[in-house]
Amino acid sequence: MTSQKSFKARVRARMDKTGESYTTARRQLLARVPATSDPITGKPPTAAAPPPPADAGTPTPETHTPETPTADQTDRIADALLRERTGRGWQEWFRLLDAEDATRRTHTEIARWLVTAHEVPGWWAQTVTVGYEQARGLRRPGQRRDGGYSVTGSRTVAVPVERLFAAFADETLRARWLPDVAVRLRTATPPRSFRADWAGGPTRIVVGFEAIGETRSRVALQHEKLTGAGQAAELKAYWRDRLAALKQLLEADGDQR
Image 1: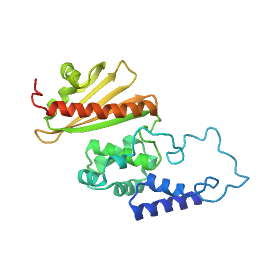
Image 2 (image 1 turned 135 degrees about the horizontal axis):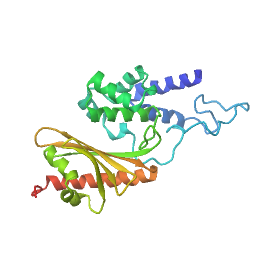
Image 3 (image 1 turned 180 degrees about the vertical axis):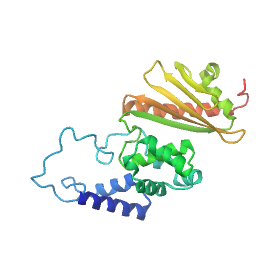
């Protein structure tokens, strides 16, 4: 336990020096350790040290390196943008959450605390929460805290929020940018949210909408209940393309037809 705390101190010292996320700093330190050494202490393992039990649990992102479907949240969202929208950068939020012992809290509890204690808007509270969970090894990119997989995507579009909502809720309009996909509505609250089964299930999409003034709005989409990292990688690329098509369609001349 002492060596674990010492290693964490080294990670945080590097974070303060380089501005890296916890995950990146930890990965860089581990990369310097020979493969035959213990990754925490840097010393050769002792003969008496038994191998970990088969049910030791899922390795953390830093010690398990298969291809992941998306980049870390801290790579996707620039520190300057996060500071502009929430009042703090990544490392400031991470230090606050560490002080609250947030690694012992659920995803929902962390996000709710950000909203209620610091007035972080809901979408950005989710963003900070996911970034923190990834940085502290609680989930891999694209993975949920419960072990399942999901992917997210978002776009800001120069149309009123009602029009952006209609692009999902109206079947005719939706078919113009999301063709050949069966979408079965579950619930919808105009113009705030839209939930639907995807291609007959079992996956589904959860979509939120936010007005940014009278003529601009933002859509944030989560595709959840995915089967694994491979499907998540495919759908991440798919939604990047489709949301770009949605933006192009709605901002084009004659989009009110």
